[in-house]
Length: 583
Image (cartoon, rainbow, N blue to C red):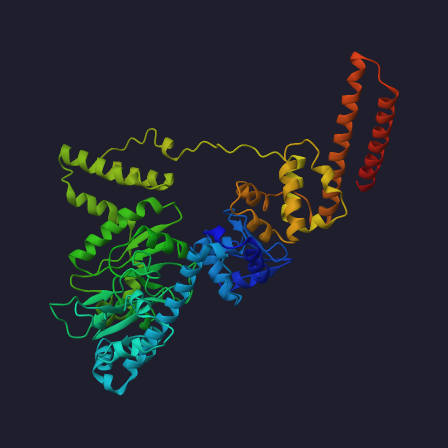
């Protein structure tokens, strides 16, 4: 989808975006010299190694090597797609995305999403006003009985759907069609053609994404009825996807770099824990934790604590979640579990025990490794040979899913101890890794290309770059191409240059060199750049002389050839004098 928007517009968005302001809104940046510094949001560290450069409009972490421009940051930090990043930056800068005429489908999709978000906000406002109405006393009493205070239900925008709601929704604006209302997933049409609200007679829980936009609703019956489910959610729509949705993400004080996240099942669990000042709580709209949920949560924190209801379904969900999470445990990430007493949930237990006891439960949460062996050991009788064998192979099949070799090592060690084998021969093979990285050479061309990538303003120097493009040297093509792009687009910072190459085969080379340590100090960048170009000219001239001299082996040099050699040598002397002068 990145090709559906013009490069010119993407450049405009990046020019209007100050990467310092963008990252400052999410991280605690502190000025250090010309740069801004913070602890890296992409890995755990004690000493800040995350640098943001205003001049180049890029970020770089010297610890984990994460780097890029404003778009890369949003993609990695918030887990957004490229298109979502453009939409986000466009909204921040208050500019509309101009789609090309031959891409009407994409324009329509973008406009429809905007329309749906606006409509969902209007619908949510109707639900919220219904609950504030004097006639809704019974509903407010129900919420109060659940222990929710007015301040909290306003924070979560709780609402209610009554008998007049359908009419109110359909009368929101003449700008909306009946199809728009149906596409929200709120309005349905029955077999007789009557339009009705899917969430009728339910307490409404607006579901917001991390930017505060409402993309779905949850509904809970006040009077339970066997004919209808107690809870329902919005169906799949163009803006609501249950397998990706996280309830309570917007209400978190911080969105990333959290010490931990507590995952619960229900809406009331999130709301009540928040009211008791148990922060960092979210819900995945049930117990079915998806790969999308895990990726999003591990982008926010390195530790996830699952606290499902204390019933059989909750226990089963905990085990299924553990299995799904194994491929994401890269050593820095960890899982913990809180197991509540039978027939209890976070909502009920916090009311009975209070904040202090619940905090204790968080502190004493069981690590994945402990729960892992507890669960598998229950399946087998390891007093028998067969039981040991089955336990061993069952555990191994799951341990292999963990990508981190050190984590595997200690799990294998525990496994062997549990079945009485203490010979750890060849365990080193599990954690040994061959260093396959080749030593990077500090070649002149690598330095030259890195200099123009890291300092695109160098293209403004009074140099005949067209002559350089004719030099036959590895790396000249990419260098000349960068110069051409910088001159044509008038690019002056690295962030915009990176974006020009996003869909190019050379993108990862450009991105790598944008933060490659070329060991050139800031005050010598221009001088070094000119020296390398000078040196390349000299090499080119020397090759020409060599070619002319090679004629002498077969036949005598002509007078014309001798004059050429003399002129070339004179040029070399001039260039060498310049080099010596600079040094």
